Image (cartoon, rainbow, N blue to C red; front, side, top):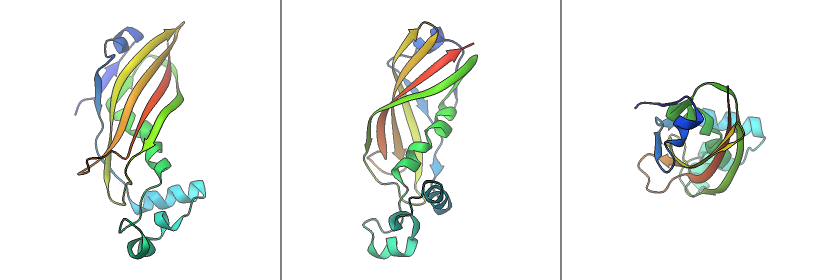
Length: 154
């Protein structure tokens, strides 16, 4: 899998309406879920108690927090596109976020991204992406969203 390299607004604009690529799969472990629960103070048993989740839960195991899956975007995004010649990149907004399917412990997920629009705002480049977090061997994605990143090229 090759990573797309972008060096400028002009290069980026060539990809409007196109799929930018897909990341590698990343396995969600119980350790990762537990660390996220600790960091966010969200210790609901469906995430952190494997025995109870197996016995009482609707999914037969613990599930990842929706926001844990969303927090993987920067890690997975960097596997798809490397934007060079930057002063700074800003996560600007998330539009139309929809969690469609739970991510169970030990599921593997990957990010798929498409560039919907790009605008040069007097030196600040606004990119609008549609993304989905795919779950290996599942038809429905974990989530879909529109992400807006601001790039300040050097």
